[in-house]
Picture (spheres, rainbow, N blue to C red):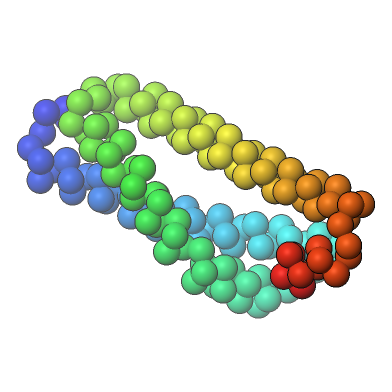
Length: 139
């Protein structure tokens, strides 16, 4: 209910975060590794999928949780403090779309920057001595 006290709002926000990030991210990791394992194979090696998923979760989950908390705790706090019950799904969906768009634009800019840098190296190949270019690249 909107306007609840701060203890209730924080408890609901943290519980929502733990339930969604704590369950969703490991399940997503396992699912994507299972799909990758299936490509080109008749059977899925479930032990390999489990080990790959565990390794990727150990590596990726701390960063995902940290980033998720930075964004979702304020969103859920506003949701439980201000947004009426009947509009919470719309609010959360809108915030999810906004986050996805931001991540997409950010990722796209990084990819474009990498492409420009690589193109610069290709152009430099034509004008710079090979040894100097390799020294600059750190090879």
